[in-house]
Image: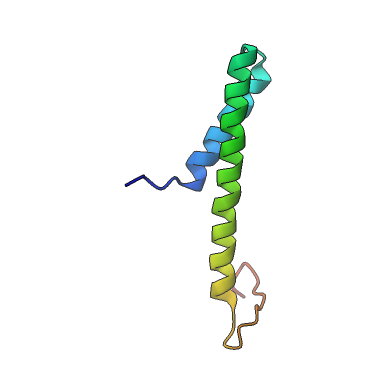
Length: 75
């Protein structure tokens, strides 16, 4: 069974890919490989954020299934 990646880990991988690319020290082939990993990490981040957004929406629905807003401070 594959280990589920956390948002923080995937985001860190994306940040590391960006830093490596920005360093300018990679060969063209290394840059392409790093870019591919970064694109995959970005897609994973988006997928994880969408899942969290869906869960939050489900928690904020009232009995009629309509979303209602609540202040972040809970007040």
